[in-house]
Length: 83
Picture 1 (cartoon, one colour):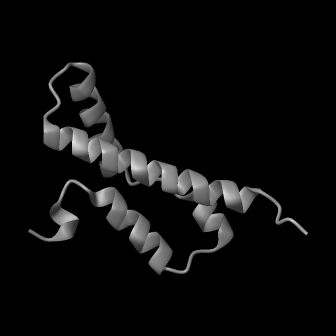
Picture 2 (spheres, one colour):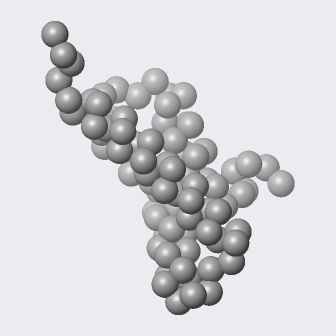
């Protein structure tokens, strides 16, 4: 199975973004695709219902790591550089 077919598509999207040499504005505007957003919503719903599998939890952890990475990147872009 190709990496893009795995549930961890969010990391593929972030890698594609960074590989495209994005501008500051493009980085700040980044949002996961609707398909990735829907997948996250589905997993969170399963978790809330107590029906999440260990694989679902690993995928949710991957989403959390991806979100943290993008928050850190965006935070640094919004913070003026120290002189």
